[in-house]
Length: 555
Ligand code: ZN
Image 1 (cartoon, rainbow, N blue to C red):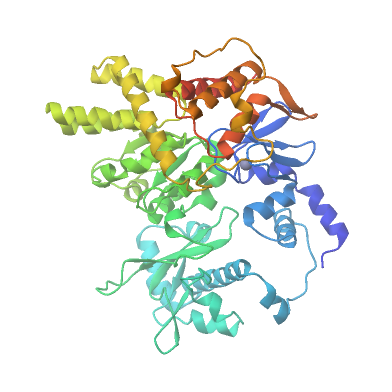
Image 2: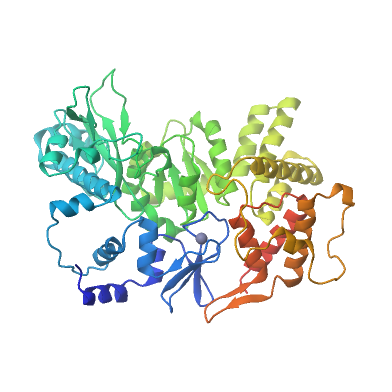
């Protein structure tokens, strides 16, 4: 048990803005700090932190509480576990006794798996640093790649020997087999060990250099192991199996080590592999993460977006992967991230380039060569299309597709102007095409169930219901001209009425305390977002965009 005085000291030390700020990029606006909510998916900030009250509050999803509650939500852990984490962070000593076997049993799966991963991580590191095989094979490989000792320690690189016996050590230390192996059905277990037909355990990563993956708060979530000796049977890289802690395609290598620098620099460099990250960090550039070489996923993109609005992607000069990556980059645009692209000189990848240059030289190169993604895509595709008119027409559509998914209307307009000039096409043609694509995308989205929410909008108590908005409370002249009834669907009519409400009464304050004021318009828009109700009417969606833009302007 933790004494009450200790808990009080922890509460005193753990300033909410500090704790939240280590996960979410916050910007000061009035007395409060604002950022993108880490608990629900949003593109504009409705998540606020009040330093004077010591609380956070999200007007989008309703999550609220103090610093401890925040850690509990972020780490999906118990109250006690959150207290322990904060104590560690603020160097407050908690007198703890050794856990009994019974208590070990009671720990939930998640915690147990983190413990097993941490144990394995320490073991891999000691194998690399303190054994002759580790030094002759693992360390020799890392030295040959030019990686310094301090960087090896920073990323906690390790080695799993040929005749590995992590499974033996793990059992000896009392860890249950359930957590050492992995059950693909329940996603329980770290999978650092495997089981053969006869039920014997053996190690997954033997003969490999180990790259641990960390959670945002620095717990070991999983591993990638790189084979040192050539083999026909085994793949060059092996990853931890999918579990409740780790899914390869959702991870960003190096994020934990980079997060402070990403916030500080307000930019995230994106590369392909672990060694690209490590070499850039060694050269002095810290705000860099690796996507693992496959197409980007929304969880990866949202993780980046919690810390910055700006991403710069570093590509090999001769990479054939650029075209394959275009879709992933479109997803970043859709999320509201500003994307730039840098092509490295031919024959170089970030790993090799960073080994030959220091941070200033690498940054100077990036600064000189970085191109806005839409311009980059235009250049790439128009080189390819040449003078072929059909290819050229296809190319224009592809570029307009990218512009159409950018959520910010001002940015869209700027890109349209820019492309109209470069491609020598009348602006109005591009505007019409963008509207057409936006409409189509919204219709498609409506058909597909939302990935992180209910398939169909469910009314929430207090949220505007269709029947409420069908009859505007004031009999004023309509602000938005009514379309002929036959062409206006029920939903469109409701939305039109809702728009009128927002425009007429959106500025009215419906909730206020000393720290925040919530206006009716914000509230309605957040409720719509929460229920996944999309505005697909081109004119109304335009009005809504404009409105959002207006109320986000700092006063
Ligand atoms: Zn939220």
